[in-house]
Amino acid sequence: MRIIVLSLLLLILTGGCQLANQSQQHAENNPQTVAPAGGYLRNDHNQRVIVFVHGVLGDARDTWTADNGAFWPTLLLDDPSFNEFDVYVHDYPTPLFAVSLSIDELADNLRLRLNNSAVFENHQEVIFVCHSMGGLVTRQLLLKYRYFAPKVSMIYFLSTPSTGS
Image 1 (cartoon, one colour):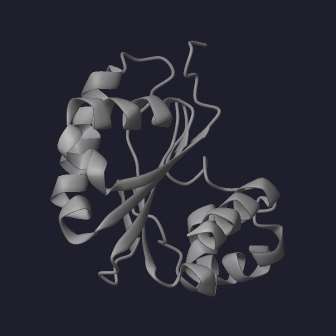
Image 2 (tube, one colour):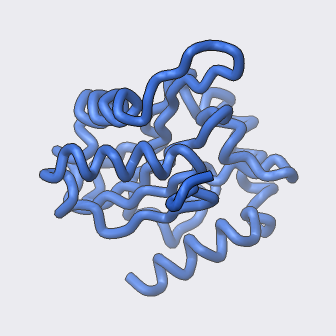
């Protein structure tokens, strides 16, 4: 488990530089790696899944794409260290000039999407990687629907305003 954590942290901190070419080739060969509404990038029915949740004013593609074009979830698909993980990317609307859903409503939306995709049903272990408001949404999901919590082994909060903005 420690190797997986260190590998994921290294991938996040480096922006996936060493695998950027592989990621770019994968994306070119698979142009629709992320459906407009998010979803599974790999669903091989592994026991573990990594779920990416973007933040405010982000989306499932841009939030997880480094400056060099490397898409973090695709880097996991291309890295043999993560062959035993399914990969899921959640997407939700975060409009700039319109009324947005509340954190509670977004948590309900996340629950519905995860349930429809059988994420908790089909996996023994769930790992969340959350950016900004995505961390607040994920935290609300786990507080409101505590029956999910036993399957969540890790949550990575990236720029999540835990004590306010």
